[in-house]
Amino acid sequence: MSFSARITSVLLVLFAALLQVSVAYRIEVGDAYPDVLILVVAAIALLTGSVSGAAHGFLAGVAIALFAALPLGPHALVGTLVGYTIGRVGEALITDDHPAPPLLAGVFATLAMQVGRPLVEFLVSPAPARVDGLLGQAALVTVISSMLALPVFLLVRRVLVAANAIAPLGSGEAA
Amino acid sequence: MRSMLPRTPRRSKRANVSATGGPVAPEASYVDRRSRPARGGAGARARGTVFPRRRAAVPVRRAAFAGLIIVSMALITASYQGEGEPSGVQLAVLEVVSPIERGMSRAWDPIAGAWDWTGRLFSATSENPELKAENADLREQLRFSKEQADDNERLRRALAFDETFTFPNESAYDRIWASVTVRQPGAVERSLVIDRGSSDGVQVNDPVMVPGGLIGRVMSVTPDYARVGLILDDTQAVSAAVTGSEAWGVLKTVSTEGTPTMQLRFVKQSAEVAKDDQVVTSGFASKNGELRSIYPKGLPIGIVTNVGNDPADLHKTVQVTPFADFDRIDEVMIVTSKRRSSE
Image (tube, rainbow over all chains, first blue to last red; front, side):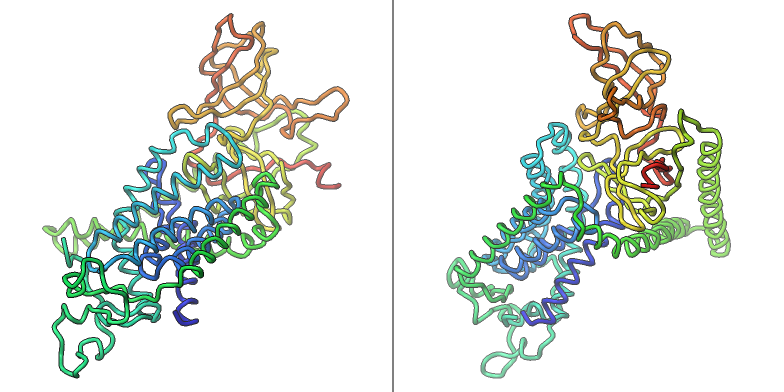
């Protein structure tokens, strides 16, 4: 990936973090909201591989903690794990013209973030009520986010192709 | 299911040209000659690899992953040493991005309104176009008027509250009104960011109220912004008392099946508490003055809705319904101590 392509993908993550804090958190359905940021991380990881996925997951975690004044670390840790895992799966994939991998990656990423981050916080600072209602909220956020998984993936792919971060579909080139 | 996603338009002529220079079939153009053979042998290769990416060498990949995990752990350790409070760097970043966040939030409201407006417009296809436009225009005006009416009502309530609300020793405190800029919804975090900071006199631990009652305290401040921890957060506790009674205890929020409930705990059994009694901050202070509640005495919190009267229990547990509507917090009042300000 060229330097300008890296800058583009970093800016994409930062913009997604800002969008998450200022808009997505406001779209409340019950106690849940769409997690656009982790969908962007999942799409980047799926398209660019494990190392890039982990790095972007880490960056997303740090960015959301900075922008929303949350404790640094839990988001970054789970983001790194999610990005790396999806990146590894992406490296083994044959084709990206099938909707299942991005959809499943979005579902996995959202669920992992919704369950993993509170668990990390719980392990660091035990407070029993913090995990109450966690699964219900995680399920609702996952359902809402999964509806956005494919559009977000397509958008991210378009941006990364435009930035020459990845080769266009069918070009047979490594970016 | 296959090929449901739109394929990205090819950007290079080379992509459609075979090694011999002739055109290739679309399926054949998916083959990435430089990547490893696809799983499944020749059949899979024929379908082609369309994630043409350079894979990092295993040691590099493992080192990068391990490095990021270690840095994340270090961040967690550093962050929670300060009880999870934002660091100076975080506050500085918040100071920079808060205006952007606020701008994006404000930009979102008209988009949501326009989306509704568009939906309504398209649903009325059978109507005369002029009537539709006029109807939409009227709806837009109505929405705008309703928004203004809501704003007026909210501000009127805030003003009335400011004029009528009193509490003991209030001359020692100032009141600062602020608007909410960022909310953190969900069952886990319970905090919000307001557009007043230390340059306005806001200080850490200042109580924060809405017209009606107490909602929390200031957790951290920057010159122009502050983060408010809500009493709905299970990590918060308030020393509270029941008015007209000698009952007092510690008010905590517990979550029952995801629904937060406030409880006044450690109320002695002999204390008389009845339903509909008002619960206020107790302003607890030890005799030597070393221990003192950060909340001044007499700030309204809520109303008693249930009293646990099991004589086998050492203490009563009193269920409290807050006066504040935590689902809709737009303007807040910060009660800041004049004495601490002058210090």
